Length: 309
Image 1 (cartoon, rainbow, N blue to C red):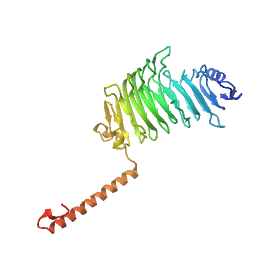
Image 2: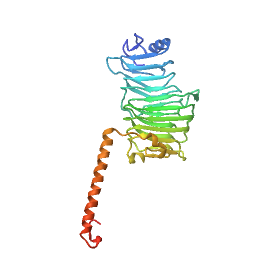
Image 3: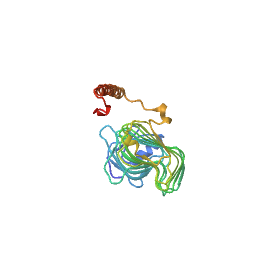
Image 4: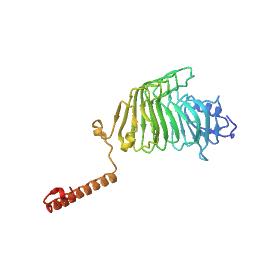
């Protein structure tokens, strides 16, 4: 860790000058927060705590936490920080990106894997992790990296102001369970692949709610040849063009499909009122046109002579 202030970290009211001291204090407490009061760059030997932890900035300013490839050893959350960690392997633990997290520009995307790294000693993990992202820009994977297996159900939640690319199963990885991806109103889904090349998930479900942004062009259940999983659009307000973006799913549930009849998204009152007024106006115009046609036809012995017919 690069040199930082003598009181760069706070844990339970006590100040520490090194990351190691702060982590040790947190582990002794059993859980809690590491409050950053200076920018931090973690090095290869630095580790996340082995107990559940939230990392956030103090009240003075939003601090940066920078690192390369890191591994979670327990549930971990980030709030109100400038996030510059290149990759996190969750190892079956839950990873949360909370509110007010900024991700700086980089050609290397910030990625979070639910499972293990390709070179991990334990390449098979049994767990039911949750990856939740409320802000920042991330690439999220329901699996570990290539050659690993995660046995259990995985949840990926994208909401708030977050922008995410999501894959259920990374290349050559396996999820022996269900991967459920939920994208809520106002969040951005820039890409979705249920299964990347030679990746495998036992079950897949993509759920869209509200009016999420669909900035990219690739929204596919799988690239492995056989359509896979369910794309549940019943609770989303999407244009026909947006709905057409979803390909290679075994089932696509739309808001107007019989299977979704009881779950159709109720439109806002103003929108519903506007739609009703437009229908009423169209009906009045239709009546007026019929009347004009009738009057016009009555003036001609041969109806085909009328310009309205």
